[in-house]
Amino acid sequence: MHRIHHDRPWPLHGSAATRRIEQAAAATLPAHTLMQRAGLAVAQLARALAPHARRVWIACGPGNNGGDGLEAALHLHRHGVPVAVTWLGTPESAPPDARHSWQRAQQAGVPFVSGPPQGLGPQDLCIDALLGIGLAPGDQRPAPPARLRALLQALHQTPAAVLCVDLPSGLQADTGQYAAGFAPGPGSPPAGARHTLSLLTLKPGLFTGAGRDAAGTVWWHGLGSEDASTAPTAWLAGAPATAPRPHASHKGSYGDVAVIGGEALAERGLGMAGAALLAARAALHQGAGRVLVALLGQTALEIDPQQPELMLRRVEALALADLTVVCGCGGGAAVRSVLPGVLAAAPRLVLDADALNAMARMPALAQALAQRAPRGQATVLTPHPLEAARLLGVDSSAVQADRLGAAQALAGRTGCVVLLKGSGSVVAAPQGTPVINPTGNARLATAGTGDVLAGMVGAQLAAGQAPEQAAVHAAFLHGLAAEQAPGQGPLLAGRLAEYGSKGL
Image (cartoon, rainbow, N blue to C red; front, top):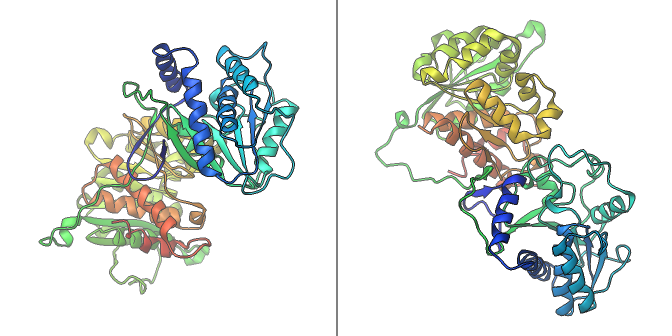
């Protein structure tokens, strides 16, 4: 059994791949073996998580996920743990493995109850074995019945810790979104600690969308049937490898980054220079040898007094063909006029914010973007869900409904690497397997943190990283900075720009 850390990449398998692995494993084992192994693993983790629990309540669904819960109840009961089980199944309708586990639990004298025991506290434990991987994208099942809804609500509101078997019930393995009717109320975090024991495989939905809040701490058990032959659906990124800089290096060894953006038109009341400066500071702290800033529109700024190392230039003075360019941060409408030249000349390019909005509005720019990959020019797009939706011609809810699919679709359409921001940011390339970033937290929900990320990607590109690797590494370090920065409240982007270098 493994607790999932950031120490290495982890393969992730969606629902279809997991079912293939399960079927292959079951075909080589005696009947009921996988369910019995799963139940034992759940019981072992339950005892480790709540060694002093006065009561363990297990909510079991009518299918095989419920069978895993019944097996766990059997083992806990045998070890003297005070356990109570609520089972939504019937012996007549249960799948064969689940019915066999129900019989074993009955014969062992496991107590069954109609609902959660009264008086559960933080030292106690609830086990969610209601649905598991039983919900797939596109399921048209009706809303959950009243009794199931009541159990789901009890699991969400209990002050006891909750251990989810395979998946939090109602969460879709492939997307990290709840199926219709299963999501808890908005703005209502779980009352107790959350854990998820993913069985056989790790599922992508545990790490993106609503998955991270729903799953809490994620554990994995392969049930003795690890399968290296089935290609992963996605990867969970691990910590990037780093090496000390050679003593005989200089600023030219790490590339030049130019940030173009920051529309500043006083007569229109616009002042977005801060976005470009944040991206530039992030690139500088991330290790770029030199960072140039071209602010668009009228501005009297000749030096950044907080970061005098930055070199301010006019756009027309930039030697674009020699630079890694980060374009769009706070660029407003003014960025549209410079994008044709940037798209044509920059060998390495990060497009963010208003540059992406311009692509969505102007077909000629989108066509110019598509021509970059055939010329061997590297491009990374860093949209948030609404910007991705504009580029795909859908609404943001469609992007969020399938974040991996949206990132892959946008990468295929544009020929670019796409870093789709959000909880569990997704990096997708035109070919290959998408990568989910495991780092970050709600402290990043402040203005300017996306500009910082764009600058960090630019620095990675300038240092010679391939586009997908640059995006993965920057996203990881960006989130890690939020996790490690001092304090507890929202993290200001200016501080994040500096802390982003701590992982180097």
